[in-house]
Length: 264
Length: 83
Image (cartoon, rainbow over all chains, first blue to last red; front, side, top):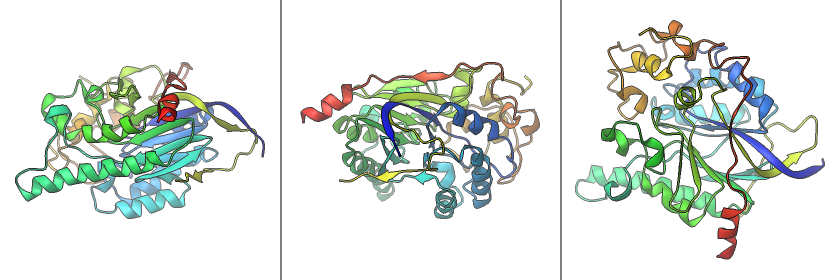
């Protein structure tokens, strides 16, 4: 297989919320994405209620893009029914690369993925103080941030993309009601992105947020929630194309979902 | 306001999700008007009119322009390499 350094097109989208009656609804979207992109990235809330039946429907919808590698993280909706492990396995069995604190290199681009968690931003970030429940809540966001850091630390590629569901910065949840900002993401996720800068961060969850922001370290952050993309760019396919340096395989029939695990 | 075609999706989603106490942290649930609960996994009441659920309504099929971002290349790599 010959490979050349080139610009790789990454199609990113989040918050598909595939439900059991969605047969055929997302195929045009994924077919379109596969026409324009070299990699597809899914930023969580792949299913509506986290049901295995919904995951099976999604896999069928994604079959039209089976010639492309697909990198994904789960979202809070994928946990709703307590079947997240089964949902994940269905997606993995279909060839998706589902990240939860891991890193992979696909088409020469390093991807670090984690769901993330809530907790608020800046000085308003919830602190682990007081009731045990509050401490548990905060610990969950700390754990997710540590998973992200662990994944980012493994990447040595020139281009690195962080894939999240929750927002790591406040800027991309702006336009949402202020009251729910703390539930849309957490600044704790930004810390590892400052220590390990990335080419881009993509996330979802904030359907009514803002498309673009950046970390304190200058890494661009894109909110790619499907409803937001549709509203922001109503006449364009509802996915973001990131053009970043990578390695494009010259093979006509590319190995589907090819990926290599990043080494420490 | 009718919910169809390329109208803002939040209208459609909100109509089907509002009032669901089990999903308080989904921003799509928050900004919504009246609407009923629907059974887990079932088709929302507004689904047939909702743009999300129409296969030909994601975008204008004649429109070929894409939402493309080109993050500044090399900047973050230089930062990383200096360490």
